[in-house]
Length: 240
Image (cartoon, rainbow, N blue to C red; front, side):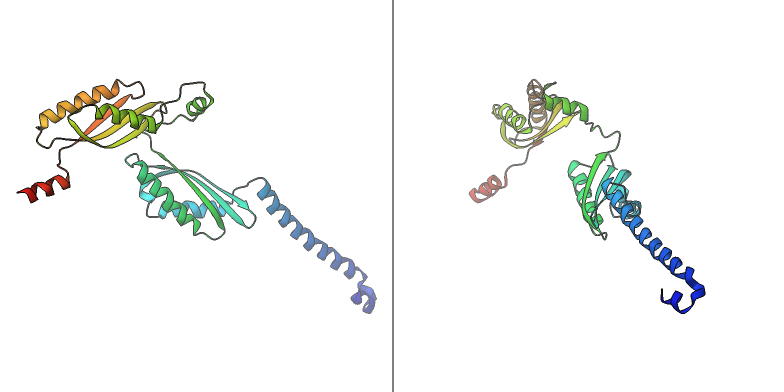
């Protein structure tokens, strides 16, 4: 306006300045609208996805990660929530997989703007660990019979093993679910250290058959502990 008043020949400058200011306001509004749409539609933050992928591939656990199945980075306000699905080596145990998940989670949390991270791992093909989500859902709905709980299987295993007088103690029982429905059991028992290896193996074979006759156990493995307890050894040494 001042320019138009001082230089009457530049009356159009005022309109041009107004258009310029309006354009800047529109651009700012478009940026805000774009960010809001991304948040409302859970659009992936591609730059963050790329950084997370680099962390997984180049980290200390990169050798154990066979593939990165999915990375989702959803924006929540000024921060992001990251969801990662990976495939790990078939040779890893469940505890090793859990450790990898936690290490990756905290490594990704170090990225600026990351609010929370969830890491899910699945074993590679050939590991024998197969879980059917549809079958698991049908179990919960009651359409198919649920497998026995780990607690009830543990009680049954200890009961069957404890009924044999040759078993001095049941040291551990591990319950695994195979193909969602089948229950496998690994049990470690302590037997008389004076028993021969052949006799102990025969006992383990008999106990394996007894366990597999149980309705809720499909496969059983028996591990033998022929070592004498430390307290017994110490008592014998004192007695001598």
